[in-house]
Image (cartoon, rainbow, N blue to C red):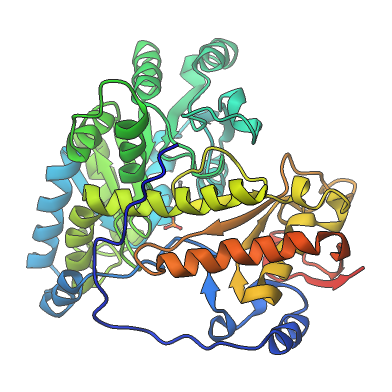
Length: 458
Ligand SMILES: *Cc1c(COP(=O)(O)O)cnc(C)c1O
């Protein structure tokens, strides 16, 4: 791994002060929050790593765009700016702005899945899975086996298992499969990238069976950066060229612009087929608003038009991916286990390995998340058995494949010194790891419990 890291390609013009609580105050706050970090006031958090979605810092150019936003109901100049910017980047015939990624899914997936039984993806993000199911189909994940071994340093753990994909198509019948979804980067596998070779192979399999390819593009620029860094023959291509090459493999795309496009709210649908474009327009008008704003303000459209270009910038991506790599290298030195190699938007600490004395049904990742808050005011998120919940038939606690404590890094928000605090907090926790206890749930709703459940230390 390279030891040269890439510094912030920006300077700070406006700052947002953060409160620094004492450890005693944090112990009190997390108890009052029933040991659920979703109940904490964000003001009581020093470094907020809950998500990288919609939490990025906009640039001076974007804020200037906000003032310039044209709020006309139809034909606004900000809409035209967005379409120009998005068309240049993705090279799709029809692009529809919507208010966020799941709105794009709500509009497009029922069209693709009409009279179909299945969608297959390298991994469905949870809202994508939900919209496949709402459309009456089943979502099947088909990721490569390497993704499931946190210690394997495989470069493209987000890849589709294309051999398995061919088998699945044979088994299920191509006429029953509404779409093949390529999620870039593979969020649920740990922000892991998908290689260009893999994208092309998936796309040619889909084409052979006449199944449309949908690109779930939330972190497509980060994926392009990984291709440039890790895949043979891409080192000399620009990020923009790599993005075009990836998108040429898709018939449709949906994008949550809250990630790589560095806006606080926004999304896109991309379509080539004229008939489907008409259906998308109709559904957009019913659910989101007229086609020229799609549930967004003119100022949001303007900020998005600019953010798309900034998200493509290679110096920015070097710094962005470099941040996670930097954190990973510090954890390597300290012997703290995490999903390797580091992915795009987050570092996933392997809490199952870090706290081996806590069994899955006492939630090791949640225990680590709480310790991180107590230690340094850091807020991460459990992606393990605590999040997974109970078997709906038996009520028994399910055992997750991994007990990850996810530390998602917002874009352009935290400096290298903040990253040092995160690494040091984990190192301090490691020194007292045997004193850390598991948790039990005292109150929980039947679904999506991790947002509202109450917990107690054992
Ligand atoms: C965030 C995300 C979505 C959903 O987008 P929202 O803007 O949160 O509605 C869909 N797919 C992937 C891969 C995502 O990361």
